[in-house]
Length: 260
Image 1: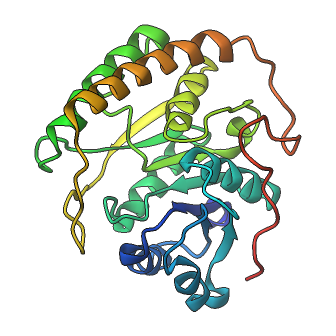
Image 2: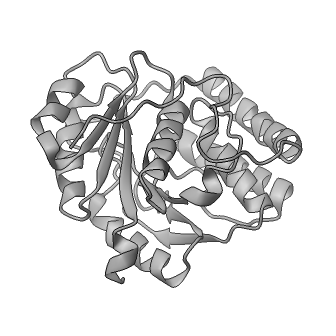
């Protein structure tokens, strides 16, 4: 990848109460890319102290209270867009994603500038929970019906977002629904979507606690499909917005990040 393109890319890490894994994820990310923005979505653990320990090596922004992953991503999009970045590569702070896969995104962006790049997980080989595979199957089918786009992993959170396109969408999602909304709306706008293979771990350092409840999770999958359909119908009727214009209801507008 060429140097000029690299200068326009930043890693975006939304986090909420992941103090056990956050420090390692940030440190490993910094080994791959110089510009890292962490959005602390109102954590109540040691997250603020961990971020302070990195000093000027990272950008940090904090929500006073928890608003949801979607709001954290939306804050990150606005902050990085205002600072002139062309791409935000979002990855999770819980250890599921491997920052060492970032060069794969760099290569894909160099080959197809302006595309939405999705990190495609090996759900079978990684030993993902059955509920994750079940939800993914429904999500992939729904996405294909709504947009005509066929993807193997429509729920991945490891993504490279083209900020010029994303910031013109009147995104409304506050939680994980934001990722689905962005995917549907970008697909409908004809933005190229490229999938690349990534590593994934469902047993990161410190372990993962399962909260699987069959009835609740099945209902969530159904609601997720309904949201996809709603986004497809309503979002296509909303006009584009100018970057930097007031945030839609649901999330507080992003404030400037802490200086590096």
